[in-house]
Amino acid sequence: MEKLIESLSDAPIIDKDGYEYLVHPISNGVPMLDPDLLREVVVEVMQTADLDVDKIVAPEAMGIHLATALSLQTDIPLVVIRKRPYGLEGEVSLHQQTGYSESEMYINDVEEGDRVLIVDDMLSTGGTLAAICTALDDIGAEIVDIVVVLRKVGDSALDDTKFDATSLLDITVEDGDVTVH
Image (cartoon, rainbow, N blue to C red; front, side):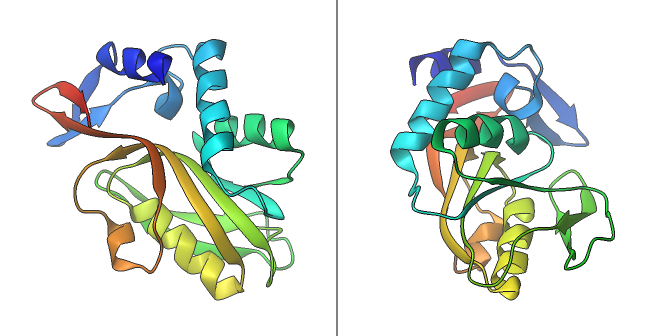
């Protein structure tokens, strides 16, 4: 995790209405995402996650590049939870709210009995993952594992669910600095 830790020291932090927002290649695609960093993260996810699943599920937008690389390495199909509806049969909508935004998201191609791995870039307020987990559970999918690259230490909406996420690194963002725990 050397490259990931090193990249955190250079990551800008911006203020979003009082919320310290970490701008990082893994979670924002800005600054530019170095292939060596992405490779390091995906290899670590492969070593950490339970890959005995039918599908990898990732929310749009920044979970997509991680899950795509993971899907290519494991030959496990990828489902992207989208921010816009397509009106396809079986589409399920969910409402997610974070510390800095809220929106609708849409799930296609996950069915009752599917065993899924959820992959995402960051667990911060937990609003997105909590909403996704609830929707997948309502569908009847089995959430086998949840892996995030970075988790901000502190309370999260995921804490109010029956689901737990594994993180590659736990961090705090405070007073413009990132600390790795």
